[in-house]
Each structure stands twice: as structure tokens, then as C-alpha cells.
Length: 250
Image (cartoon, rainbow, N blue to C red; front, side):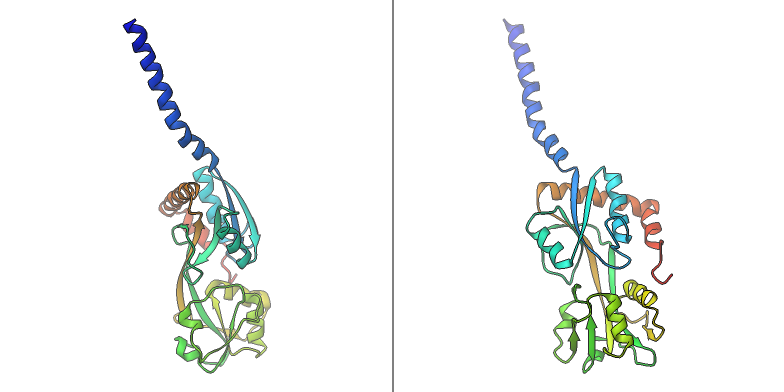
């Protein structure tokens, strides 16, 4: 009788342990696919499979054994889908954007915005140097309040893309254009204009850029896995190799 009781206790203990562990295992399994709403940005997010940020995330997900489903949307739509919980992650989001409840990746970029000017014009080195001028801001991007709150600057949100921003500047419809450095260089190359310059030593502002993950158990797990993979990529050189690939100025 004692032996039977011991056997029963052993079996019960194993079953109890199995049931305790099962939810964790099931939860981990259900988090293995990550849907991502991505905003198209020249050089950084070119398509569902191309662009610096896309390649960084694809490489990290492969290391983390996560299946990815990346889809492109306008920036506001991508943000809305993330805030409604329709997708698991948002790429990218900067420190100038809306404050969103989320888990963050390691910074995937320190975004440096510059004032691009027509050749012969003075290059601003501070926000106050833009006062009294008509300044182009690309419609879909977030800019810091330290810039946009200045009432002495005439801002135009007419440019729908960095390419439009550069073309309008080149044609004299804008006095200056505020664009992220690499995106601006890509836009100059694609537009074919030869009268637009900037000063690489004088950024107007700097922002941190991340991938955001849902504020859920799956989001926490996915953020942990991606960040762990990012650290490994930084340590073994893959991160730097992706960053150096396909420079925007050709």
C-alpha cells in the first residue's frame, strides 16, 4: 500500500509540474510569429524585404527563431495599427513621435536631421537660424517640438516625401529643407539636382529611433529575443556590415 501511495505521489508530482510548465511553453510557441507594421522610408524601409531597418530585423529574427510578417503602411496608419493591437511591432518610431506604451528595441539609428540648402545659401547651425524662412518638413515624419514649436519659422508640410522636399528646395519653393542625413542624400541622388548642399558637421537635431513591441507577454518575449540578437550582431560585426551596405550617396 505504501509503495502504491509513493507511486501515486510521484505521478501526481510529474503531472503537476507538466501542467505548470505547459502554459509557459504554449505561450512561447504562440509568440513565435511577429507581425510588423513598417513605414516606408528611403534607404531604411524600401519594401517588405529591402532597406537597412528591414535587413537588421530580418537578421535578428532569424537568429531569434522568430517568423516575420512585415507589411508597409503610411506612418500614421502603421502607428494606429500598433496602438490598436492589430500588429505585434512598429518600425520605426523616434523619440520625436507620440509617446506609445511599448517595449523598445535597442536604438537602430541615431537620427540626425540636417538643413539642406540651395548652393550659395548659408547653412543653419541652430533652430534660431531658420527664423523668418520657409522650411520644408516631410509630411509623414515626426520632428521634435524644439523645432516645430518655434512660431518664427514658416513650416511647410507640403512635401509628401524627401524627394519632393529636395525638388521643392531646388526649385526655390522652399528656403531650407529639414531631412535625415542619409534620406536627404538619397533624395538628392534620385532627383538629379545639382544645386543642393548641407553641412555634415551641423545637425539641426538628433533623435533616437527604435522598433516598438507590444506591451504584452509576447511583446516582452519578442523584444528580449530581438535585443539579444541585436547585441550578438553588434559583437560579431553583422550589425556594422548591414549599416555599411548600399550607402545612400552611391
